[in-house]
Image 1 (tube, rainbow, N blue to C red):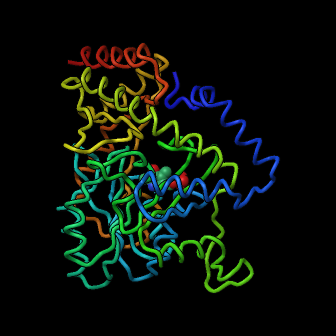
Image 2: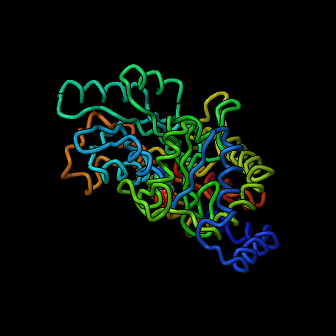
Length: 378
Ligand SMILES: *Cc1c(COP(=O)(O)O)cnc(C)c1O
């Protein structure tokens, strides 16, 4: 059994993917080919924002957004304590200070109450200027943007939506990657919409920011590539990846998201009450980048991890360590404040295999082995 079976997906999409790749090889326009702008248009239309600017990966996408806002040393950027490292690495890499905020146990996403506390603390200390909230759509579910936006607007902060895991999710009819003032995603192979290498994108409704993003991603270009008006980076999505993503976006829209949601529903129905299952807020739709359960404690979690591994069922611990306890952040004064939920999640969380091409028998096997393990404990 595979944790996320990219081989089965490729076999399903092979003829179309191969054809698209062959076309790029024949045209040999490996950088900035027409497939890149075609994909950007398709992504913007799907997400429902005016501009999509693709780039080299999801981490660069975050950095590019922070460059647009000129975030720098002395600025505070609020980041959930429970997320992938890049969410905090991006602000640190432009010289700003990530300030870690606790999350909600049920959804794994940023707590608006904890955000407000952290903003007040930073303001009171007076050393840093609060500038940006990076809200992460963790495991596929959009963060609670109504509550987070209320707090962000109260204190005059921009919202940067890190939708690396959230692409395809929504709240009501509003799609993930449309909730931030700027939003980003990643096309790393294992993400909900993955390519066959690295890739990422930035989304915004603002024309002026879109223009800046297009400049920053190609060496701060002006009118052309050899007219450089600001210091930028080199971060483009290459044409082959764009061609692959065009095919994969169609599959995601037409059946993959629904199939994932059905599998998640089966897990939840079978495992509710046996372990703690993830909660999807009312009116929210998750793209299920991960299906993560909670065990009672670290011992139980580690035990189940090993037990399932022995049965040939791969599981993963996302994430074993709070951001605020990562060594890389220790020399920065990142202002830890009561990040108790994150501490507990890191001990108890376990992600189960899930992908759109998973057979019912495989799902049933995962379910029955978990039941077996937990019943033997109690
Ligand atoms: C994967 C991920 C990123 C970074 O994306 P890359 O394309 O790997 O650079 C950023 N934030 C979150 C939450 C992620 O899961």
